[in-house]
Length: 208
Image (cartoon, rainbow, N blue to C red):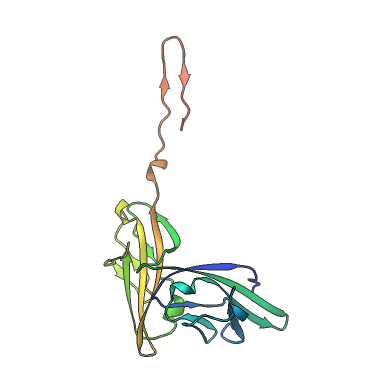
């Protein structure tokens, strides 16, 4: 596997939501040790457990914010990867990525909750914009959503919410994307203007 030692992957979560973290090493479902930075013996907090090599937050609590490390032992030695977990109290988490688009483009936004979908449990998917429910133009099984041709009003924080049944309870996983609109005024090329005041010639360069 690739050496990820020292890298930190940041996850933005909302309190009360389901969160799964996966170590990006080969065969990471076996012989993986998870620990929390700054805790005694690296012990995991209440409500956080390891299942099949994944770290499960059942659900995320504000007190769970911090850095978690997965360690996988190979014959050549251990590999470590760090995960930063930031927790907000709102229904929709802070955005994990920023996507920019232009007006008139038919845009697709990915749900990117692969580990949740791999559970193969019954699930339902919803999308919200600025934490209000929206009706996508189309929605695929993996949560990929298509929007109508983009306009300035479409800029905002989009959250993919996935409801899953686990251990007889319903949990909701959530991930947000910030959508920004490209400033089209920068694309317009203005013709250079040549001005002729009395007695002198002034050349105005493009962009000045």
